[in-house]
Image (cartoon, rainbow, N blue to C red; front, side):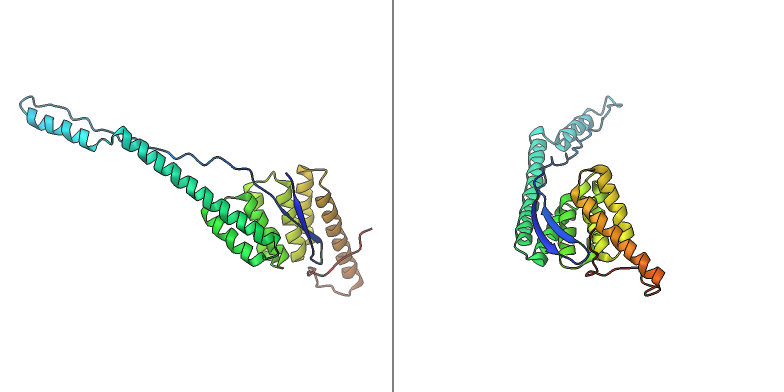
Length: 228
C-alpha cells in the first residue's frame, strides 16, 4: 500500500505521518424478511362469505413483489449515499491533514466515523493526527481501536507504539513494536522505533540506579536518546 510521508519532530521519536487509502469494501447486505401470510381455514362450510373476506384480507396485507423490489432499491440507494458521504468526509479530512490543519481534519473524520464507526484506517489516521498535536492519550485510544478492528495490520501497531512512546510508556511501546514486527518482520519503522523505546528504558534504569530520579517512571515528549 503506497504511503505518502509527512515528517514531524515529536521529541521521543520522529513521527512519520502516513495517509493510507483504504480499499472500498462491499456494503453489508441488508436482510429482507418476506411477509408471512396467515392461513385461514374454512372449518365451517356454511360460512363461505367469511372465508372470502379472509382471502381478500390476505391479498390486501400481502406486499406486492414490485413494492418489495422498490424497498430493496431504496435501501441500497440509502447505503450508497452513506458510503459517498463517508468517503467525502474522509477525503476532505485527509486533505486538511496533509495541509497541516489537524484539528479541522479531526472534525471531518469524527463526522465520518459517526457514519462508519468500524473504519480501521480512519481510526489509525486519527491516532496519527492526535500524536501530531500532542494528544498522546487519545492517540493511544484511537490506535488501540484500530488494532482491535484489524489485529493483523502492522502499521496500526506501529502507530500505537508511537502513541505509547510519546505518552511516556516505552515498555508498552516495545510490546506494540514487537507485535508489528511479528506481523511484518521487515518493517524498518517498527525496528527503528523499537530501538528508540529500548534506549529510553535503559536511560530510565540508569536514572533509577543513580538515584537522581527514583520516582520517575515516564518520559515526556522532548526526552530523546541518541541512537547507537
